[in-house]
Length: 190
Length: 310
Image (cartoon, rainbow over all chains, first blue to last red; front, side):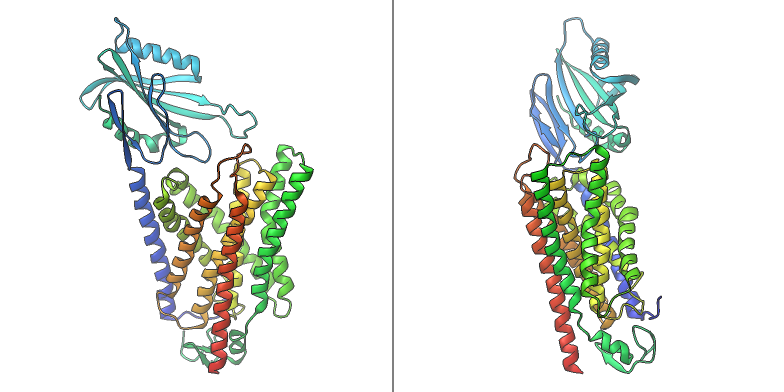
């Protein structure tokens, strides 16, 4: 089918198209990185952190100080949440963790604790709980399959209150979004 | 390319035009203006608008009931309609000097294949545009140009450049627009089919508007790339000519996506669609008319000046 031969100038032009496209895509990639690392400060009840720009932020209410969700056209929206709960006189970190996992077990479908351990975050003692559950869309006419969601909670004691920082993402997105959540976690100040 | 050989068929060249050599036959084809291509593009725009109106009216008055599978099937069929309309109008207008049907269909399929195998995975999975593209206006415009625009327009260019471009059938400057439009409609068809499949079907009225918008926009931007391809083949252009064409098409693509988002944003209806989808269709029809009209006028001007120089 091919009959005409390319001149050297045509070859250079062809290479130039590829180079321009690659440069544009590389610039797009760098720009994507800069957009994803942009943050907005929030300060509620003495708790400060930096949340990603462009995420959907819910109004604080009840124990929830901040709840942000990534925009996604379909599937589970990756979520960060900070909750502050009052402590009873005798409760310590272990009791808070036990109560939290019992509550998750009651509220979340097929809830499983995957691991839990004491950790240090930014010089503060905390408890890390990794878990999974199944998120089923309440809209039964929706054709999406239920999604396996991975969650990671960091529980801190702050005077007479417990501060819980939560990360939840679909199994597919979890690892990819973990580094960004850890940046969010390290931006927490109280 | 050796000196004095026809840039289309490689035979000895007897005429020089725009720095390229042509044999007698291809000199005639290169300086021929094919009005059918412009008329078929105009026909696509008008027929799509009429088609959308008809489907919307049927949906509003008849309110057909679908099972999930018939809804999916209807959506997929609707996604193919814009390409069928264009092919139908094109072959009606192109009877005097027809392009080989198999080649036009082949480029259409190549555009579709590149969209499914490279374009959509690159934009949706590698760049994950739905996660960040709509963060703010600047991001929507810049990301739309650099990622979505360049990825789509390069693949439409590649569908023509690495298939028909060096063929003896690519013997008129209008052929660049014809084959690029075919590639653009192939790309649009896959975008629409994927949208239908991912959503398990679409609302008939709103779905057909979206499909027409995507098809018109992809065809319009492909027309820009096609014009630059045609000129690059038949005239000796500088090294930046084709990159400029891709860049212009990518910029138009990115700006269109942003403007469409702005004009269709009027709240969300209970059925989940944008409240003002008709303005998106009007915008797409105007953009396609301007893009395809402008390249037709430019080709007309080039042919006229070539004939004057004869």
